[in-house]
Length: 306
Ligand SMILES: NC(=O)c1ccc[n+]([C@@H]2O[C@H](COP(=O)([O-])OP(=O)(O)OC[C@H]3O[C@@H](n4cnc5c(N)ncnc54)[C@H](OP(=O)(O)O)[C@@H]3O)[C@@H](O)[C@H]2O)c1
Image (tube, rainbow, N blue to C red; front, side, top):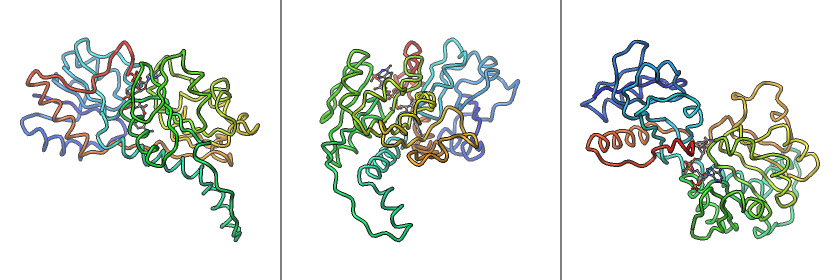
């Protein structure tokens, strides 16, 4: 069995070593143009030329949960596109979102600013009932985040494409229930995949429908947010603040207004990192199942784009 590794932005050697250790029977190489045909590919942002040269691939394993970059490319006809599901990402995402939520709710940003000025000051406690958390996307990551947020006793609402039942979460689904979901939400967490339907979904109209003084946490993809709509809503007080991990252009360009806005906290697309050991174990297990003719989880549905 031959496996090609074709990952932009990843240091290849440790990945190749880990994949070889997990799949000793396979030949695993970094792809170079003109390489012989492979059975499987492990990819991150591969060039179209790679996919064009490898029409016989049985499956393409993406080293991430989001496959939006890959769905823009033309895949080999018979290749299944497989995403990482969880692989150690969901607990990181839960940490990130709970941190941003509690930092805002408990006003730790305000306390930090006070302490920096030598001020010993108290803020009035706020009620968590007044901070319902709305999670857009109740998939692998969204449901894990919902559990973490519930542990701190915040009310949780969720929104997905198809109707869902998630314990302790008031679930809304589809375009018809989108306005009701927004009207109930004070802290909005975006964990949707980026598709034609969800691009630009965080915009002046949707964000204005949230409870007054709402807070945005975008940990999905930068293109979910219409960036130029955010600052006017913050400046008008409609939104209290935002924590953003993802941006339309990454790295965020120097001089972009998000770098310095006092109500915006940014991080460099680091909410949930791809972990090598977990990812390699998952990919190796899935290849073994496919070789035995068994089904696997995490196959992307091309008609939905995620
Ligand atoms: N910042 C980071 O470090 C980082 C790391 C990993 C992932 N991510 C992002 O997180 C995203 C979510 O990952 P995941 O593993 O949770 O994905 P997932 O398991 O595929 O779940 C996606 C959820 O979004 C819902 N959804 C999709 N299209 C929708 C639409 N048009 N309207 C309403 N709901 C819709 C789905 O509804 P159904 O349940 O009805 O299908 C599902 O509940 C990834 O796509 C990626 O972009 C970011």
